[in-house]
Image (cartoon, rainbow, N blue to C red; front, side, top):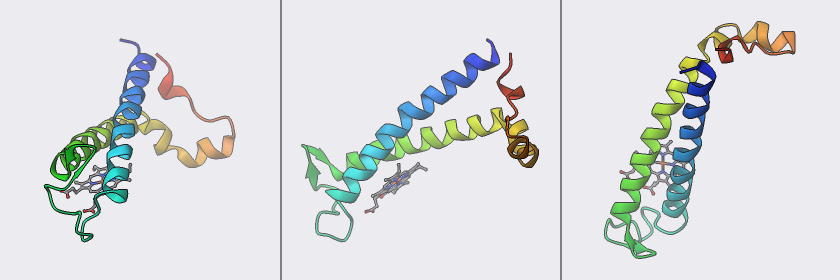
Length: 98
Ligand code: HEM
């Protein structure tokens, strides 16, 4: 598989795991915050228990972080030369080539 296709798949995975992480995190923050009386595992929002919101948040969050690490490794060359890449103004796209 071409490197650019791998990058695209990893980036798509980042997006698809970040969105549920953000949504479940916001639900926990806004509707089921700990220490509010609604922080019990069995409190519910939209028919789903806090325990399950936390579970979905954890699964999506850790999948997101794992993919983010893969993303950073795929662009390691860019970060290793970040000073030069930022100063050149053109960016170093050598890690997106085939
Ligand atoms: C998108 C941004 C995120 C938001 C807005 C967010 C928000 C939250 C909130 C509000 C809580 C509950 C705190 C409480 O009241 O107890 C929480 C818990 C937690 N979050 Fe996130 N979070 C985000 C990203 C992440 C990511 C990327 C990870 C993965 C590394 C993560 C892992 C966790 C864990 C492990 C908990 C503790 C759950 C528990 O109570 O067992 N979060 N987050």
